[in-house]
Length: 243
Image (cartoon, rainbow, N blue to C red; front, top):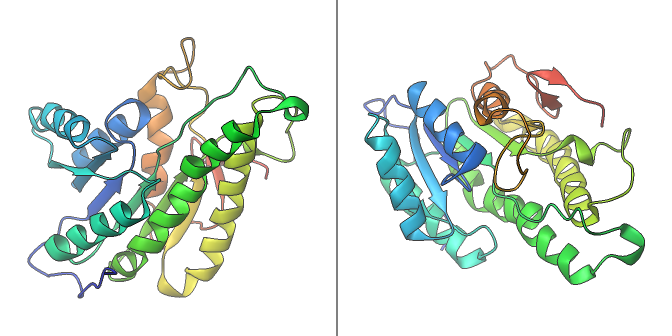
């Protein structure tokens, strides 16, 4: 069953935001900040328990955060999550495609294990793609819809070098998807942008990076753009990056 969405209720003014991979790192901080900005936040994770635990920690701080199991590699599961959001809220104002895996520093393109590349693409590219497909009717039902694809400057063709082939190629694909979605959804008033949070000290990024709060700030900026804001762009800290 696909999600069908009525127009937003005038009695429920809080925008609804969904964050994939929201149980840790940048996603967790984005959930905290969007809740602080007045959003009802759906914190998703592959594990129902991981989503529940993270949402409870934020709720203890007074945030309006609700757990939702969503594995971006599971097509029926993504559609089921969209149906649950449609039934409860009737719309989705913000979709943050944050879930990502495999920063493969040990690989080079010329010798890469293509199974690793395929696995990375399943989460980093096809995951956001199937999530947008499932939630598009709910985004169209929102008054000010936004999609933020969390990308990386490693995906910039202008500055691209060698290394991390699975991560880099999948994020470059995500950037291409961002451009296509921005063009196709323009008539529906959906602003779609890619955001590089920079090298952030997370489980994926490793130690030594910038604080998580700094990386999350640019994602929240794109998620809360005014209607006159950009679409189809690639940004870090609110400033354009070269494609």
